[in-house]
Length: 447
Image 1 (cartoon, rainbow, N blue to C red):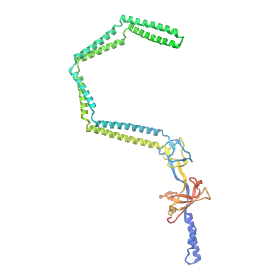
Image 2 (tube, rainbow, N blue to C red):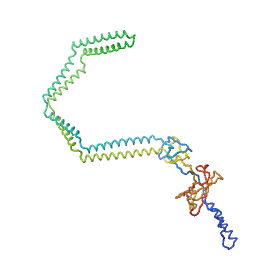
Image 3 (cartoon, helix red, strand yellow):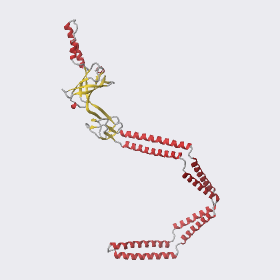
Image 4 (cartoon, helix red, strand yellow):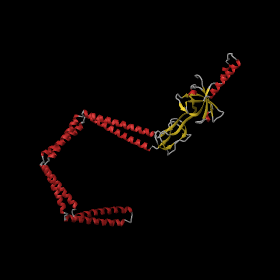
């Protein structure tokens, strides 16, 4: 690689030999050294390329269909701009589901906290009063059942039977003649009023509408009255329906059953049930007065801890879903120019596939990975560099070494290192990303 170094060494060797031949055994003078110095500093040469001061090869972290490409090659973008986006339907649905789970978990936590607060709190006077009233009511019901039926209760039940039986008898007897005649007269009177209203309406129907309107209303009202009277008359003439008779008989049976129950008194089962109601009411009152036990509080506290863990888990789910959704977008990590665009809308891409190359070409640098371990050993940061560009013959550039990679790579069987060079002089306006250059890097002792 260091052809100029080899040429310089051969020239120095040749000059020393010529001097020795001319001077015989005399001690060599310092003139060859001066001539060697005049030949210029030693350099190593290598092929290199124009690169932006910063660049990034971008790819999606997840796979999917490309839904939107917001840039084209050559576009200038700012750091943080969205460059492309995959279809987000599934990821948005996952996020919505995770947010719903978080909402539910937070509701469960609020309920658990309320339950704990309620468990720790003492019963209020109102709660104790309500429990005492419930106990008193249950005790009164038990006393009533144990005492058996009273004469008053039996008389009330017996009166209900008489009333139900009277209703049934009335239904079975049908309509009286005088009721039918009265209904008939009422119907005929309503019919006459309809005819009068119709005559008045007909008289003014072709006149002023404002005058005719009240007569129309009167006709409608008379008609409705007639229809109601006619229906009542038909009902009386037809007599009771089977349904009406069945309802009346059911009322009698119900009243008789109530009377039998009142006369018989409570059954042992009913008394036992009422006693159980009293015991339950008493236990509820005792529990209110005693307050929560340590075990009750421990259970409520455990419920809160479980609910808190559920909230944290749901939050993690939301964060994860948000992160996955974010992976469907390619975000510019730096400001610069789109160097290459390797995707198309509608295309299915795999994770890690190169999608976009982005470079900050506000300042150009030169990069070479063509220096072998023998070449790079004498290269130092700050070394002067002479640069020639294949596409710009005749134009010279100078620069300085700014960085040497500490780790090597194997290239075509050679161990090589990458060197980055800043351009310190020369018209860089015509340079383009990836142009081929040739560099001569000064080597020697520490610079």
